[in-house]
Each structure stands twice: as C-alpha cells, then as structure tokens.
Amino acid sequence: MQSQKKILSFLRVFVAWCQMLVFLAIFGVAFAAGLQIIKDVPSTFVYPTDGFLPFNIHRATQTILSLYLRGAAFADPRGVACALLKSDHDPNSPQNDVVVTLVGVNSTAGEIMYNVGLRDLRRFGSPGVGDKQFMAPTGAAINSDGDVAIADTGNNRICLLKHDGMRLTWVRATGKRGTRPGEFIAPTGVAFDSQGQLYIADPGNNRLQMMDAKGRFHVLETTELQGPTAIAVIDAKETWTFNQQGPYADRLAVIDQKGTRLQTLTLEGKPLAQITADQIPDPPVKLWGCGFDYYGNVVATDIEKSCLRKFDKDLHYLVSFGSAGPDDFQFTEPRGIAINHQFGQIIVAEKDSVQYFWNGADAVNIKVEQEGQKIRIPFFLTERALVTADIKTDGGNIIKSLANNQDLEQGNQELDWLPEGSVNKGDYVLKMRVMATYSSRDRIAKEITLPVNYLK
Image (cartoon, rainbow, N blue to C red):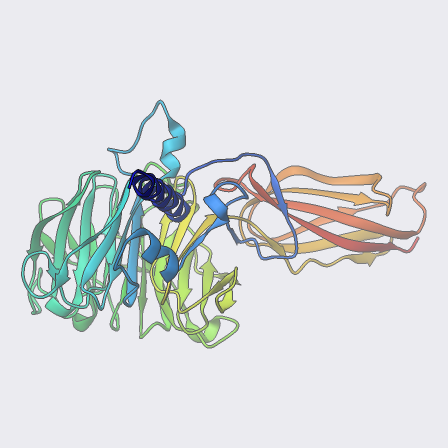
C-alpha cells in the first residue's frame, strides 16, 4: 500500500511537471540566451531559439492541448488576441514581460480559452444565448487592463468580459440584431485601441462601429465596405509602436469582400490604402485575420493558401510566409492572428492547432552581378534589419566587409563591392547575416551564403 502511494505521488508530480512544461511551451518563457544561426529556412517569422521553450515545442497541437487541459479540443478555432496585462507587469523583472495573456475563440464549442500567467489554461462559456454563453463566436480582443471583447456572431452582439490576472469573468453583453448604432448583423471582428475604444466589424450592415470607453457606439463614416470581417487597430498613444505621429500613426486595417480585399483606414473610417486578391502574388488568396506589427506593417492570414501575407504601411506586398501542411513553417487554414508589439510575439490560430513565432527578418531575391569592375548585390528585405555582409575566400579569410550590423530599411536594397587592384580574379564567397531590429534580435540571425565569381 505504501509503495502504491509513493508511485501515485510520483505520477502526480510527474504529470504536474509535464503540464507546466507544456504550458510554458505554449505561452513562452526564456530559458536560454545566445545567438542562433539559421540557414536555408524562411525567416520573416521565426520560431523561438533552442532552449527558449521546453522541448522546443512551438505548435500546440490537439495532443498537447489534451495533455494539459483534460477534455479540451480545438473546435473550429477562430479569433485570437494577446496582451501583456498590467497585473502581470513587473518593472523590476522585465523577463516576465515576455509572457503574454492569450484569449482564443473555440467557435463550434461556444467557448473562450485563456491562460492565467504561467499557472493555468482554462475554458469559459458554453453554447447559448444567455450570460456566459456564445453562439458561433468569431473575433476576440484584449487590452492591457484585462478588458476582453468577443464578437458573438450568432447572437448578433458583443460580449464584454474581464481578465483580472487570475480568471475571466462575465461583465455584460451589448447589442442585438439591427441597423442602429450598437446593433449588429453577425459581427465578426473586434479590436481595442490603447485608449480602451473598441472597433467592431459589422459585416451584415457593411460597416464598422466604434464603442468608446463609456460604452457609447458610433458608426464610422466609411464608403463602399462590403461585408468587413476582420479588423485591427494601431494608434499613436500606444506605448509600443514605432509611428507615434504622422499618417501611419493612427490606422485601422480591415478585410472585406469575402477575404479578397485588405484596406487601411483612418480611425474615422476614411480610406488610406488598399490591395485586392488579384494584386497579390501566388494565388489563390482568401484573407481571414489581420494585425499590425511594431513598425506598422500589416500581417494577414490566408486561409486558402495556408500562409501568412505581409504588407508594408502602404499595403504594398512584401512577402508570403509558409505553405500548407503540418510541418515547421507550414499552416493548416490559419485564421486568427495576434501580434504583441513590444516583443514581436506572433500567435496564429489554425484549424487544428496554435503556432507561436517571433518577428524575424529575411533577405530574398539576392543576386550577384558584375558591371565592369563592380560587383552588385541587390536583394529584398522583408523587414527592417541589421545586415552584416563580407566577401571571403573559400578558406574564410575576409577580403572586404560590405556591411557591419548596418541598419537597413525593408524593401529593395543593394550592397556593392569594387575590388581593389590587388584582388585576383576568381571565385569568392558572399556571407550575409540578417537579423531583426527587435523581437528575435540578438537571439536569431539568418545566414546566407552565395558564390561570387570575380572576372577582373
């Protein structure tokens, strides 16, 4: 009997330890430091470094979810949101700030999944029309004060909840089916700005609404919106945003026309820029969720191509990331996306899992071209980056340093090498290292090696 008790005690401790590791793997806490060099993989977004997550688990599959939360299942996951809660922020322990609170929508189950720091993963709600109930919910939003908003699509309302750092509680539901301010027809997307104002995609009414911090609704004066389904917001008063003044400071990003158009608007609803599916390479395209990053770029999920699409502040296409499948750098119908501006954490909800990334940087379309005596090296940066580039011999000796941690803007760039007269013609090697300016900075760098044939 005593032996059985010891065994049971050991099993309980072992299971608790495994649960803690799984939870940390899902939500992230630092365990290791140092620069990791990656090669031959895309790096616009990167998985956390080796040792950052237990067992390097960066995809929370159904198996992992079941291990941590008994009876839980991915049931048509949709919107996801994240925030660093003020209750979790400790200015004397900045490492804690890498741990964010997530709120995700399990649509078919009519429930919300959320975490409590590093302690617990919980579920809230059930299908229905009353308090603490949801009917086919779609969008989720959370801010640093712990205010949570859920687009309760099937009930034509917005549900307001509160995360106090320990638990999620019901506050109230607002709205009903209708066309007046504060009424909705199948609302889908929600997003908080830094001042506690809530922006809502109201597709059945072809419009956007804003609820201020006092609960008053206002219909934005938009033009020609067609069934807006996803919305994101960035504003100048937000602490962690690069553009705190000028035309890129206060903006909305909106997906409409059944996922075939992405727009940016002013906070009042006036159009700024747009891009449509036929202007995006590598079709087919059906955009689902969207979010702003720290620099004001827009990242959207593509449920048709199972990838992420990244656009600059003017919605010029930058790059597609990922492909369809269950492996690393792949997605299965990605839906909701949440981006923490401060540390560049990116959470993507898929059909059957949740993935966790850091913001990264990549150099693509690199060429080595000789014009006369000069060697031109044009390339395209998918993110503002710190770039180091050297021309080396096959033996690794540096012939010329072209850049040393040089801060270069995203977009088209070029490095040039004009060999000195003492340099012999022949074969050399370009070694380029690209690293993000925040998020994965000093943790992960992409290294690219290309041959250079110098004809004197």
